[in-house]
Image (cartoon, rainbow, N blue to C red; front, side, top):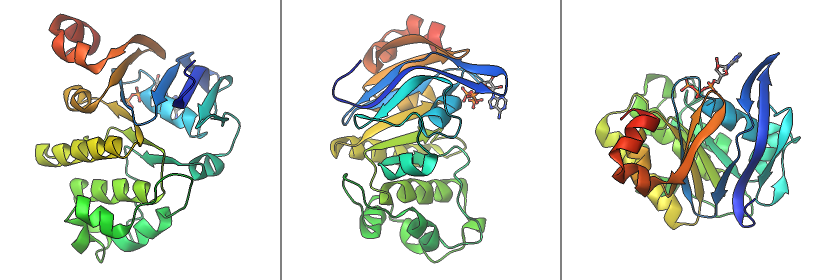
Length: 236
Ligand code: ATP
């Protein structure tokens, strides 16, 4: 247990019907800490995020956010406490403008609030996206809208699910730069990634999952520096 953790996931077991997907992973993220959750397809990374958010509540184990137990709360209540989510499928309403999509995420919490102007400062391209319908946006443009929407919700913790998936390298770097900026603001980040190296570069610590269990936990530096260990754990 981690006394000053922003997120503390304790031995959760999550099922889809009768099929068990998570076999007791424990994960913590400190205040202003960036943590990567890596592992192959089907390891249970997305299910871990879904369990934290109450989308697939764990059958056993507990989840604490900001020192409050959230295990049995509704997704709506959990997100209102200040957990931001950047889902792998972005979940942007295609028929609405960038501006309308951002407005849907706006919220006050006990954490730092962000304005649309600040988001435009981080992502200059967002300025002209505000007036466009989201249905014709590129993957990179949708990702900017999605991250901005999460920040307008004043999160203390942001859960990034495959944030660099399908994005050009330049945009991946923009996303990673944003994660560094959040860390600088004291915001905690949990990054689920297949593109492990880019995530490791911005992370303090890393967990590697396989088949619903944590296989390795350590510093990101160690995994970046130790090529044989990295190859064994994440195959790259
Ligand atoms: P990926 O990178 O492919 O998203 P992941 O590490 O996020 O992989 P999960 O998507 O969490 O893995 O999947 C964990 C396990 O749960 C897998 O065995 C998967 O088949 C199963 N699973 C995921 N979603 C469902 C679902 N809706 N119904 C049934 N089983 C599911």
